[in-house]
Length: 429
Image (tube, rainbow, N blue to C red; front, side, top):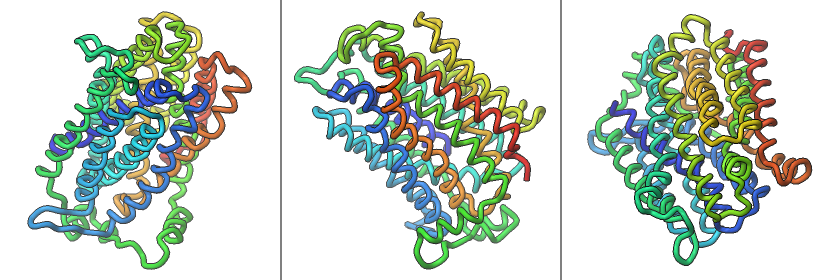
């Protein structure tokens, strides 16, 4: 549980970012079809930060008194930077300030999460990884519930959801971001205080191999990173293909869901209107339900299904549920009915947060988890770059006033991922 508080706090920050960044950008003057390119901070920082931090955390041991390790110091720095970015975003009055804070926040959250994922792999036995990752993913989903619900609840308890006096971030969103900055420091701080990492010798004994004490090879780090990519195990190569199409779908969902719901369901004509604010708040409620389903499914059913059906078949089935969810969003116009497709998407989300990392850790056998978890993230962020560069022009050219059709594109991509999971069998060594 001590390990999970950092994940819980980070999930709140991620949820506030995902659920409100389109709203913040549109309120400060951004155009709807510019949203994907404005959100390119996520893939760019992930592409740069996670592989580098993962590689460095594999081999650099920091000790301050009786505290330290390979992963914890990076988490500490990332938590401080994340809190500063959340506070800055809360008080942004112009678009460029919000964009700058978004870049800092995304980079800092990556600095927290990359070592955290490797820490779970370091300290959880191989036969318990599916369960351990499921528990952490579920607690992260519960944290996300709080992050997505916060603006809606604050607006209904006295913080007006409309524009702040003098413009800027809506008051309910602003206060939620400020609260998240404090939670980030407290949650990660508790993990840093309670967790004691294994020493390199202990970790080597724990994994049954001295490979986990790997130190980065000397020379150009980018060339070394390229050599690591070339040397990926075949099962990991297959998994990266599945990941690309899975995350392409999800990264269509996050920037476009607020425009879809506010326009397609609530009939809003402009950002900042009463209908827009009501729809944007409802998006947070829907994403909260999405994460509740993901958390419960991840805790109660997913590990058992993976053991009974196999990891690849379970993952494909969950992605198929997500396909149905995206298609239902295209046809439904009732706000309450949208809970059904979001529940189906929650099943896919639970699997995406867990089963690919089970396949990853199994493929590596406990060796160089930081390095390859960071490299693995490259194939999560590449689809983000694709969405950022492609979906804006697609929206302008094919359906400029009907962003709901972006959900059909997401459904097609997730269907491809589900099919490729069965064809490529990324859990096969």
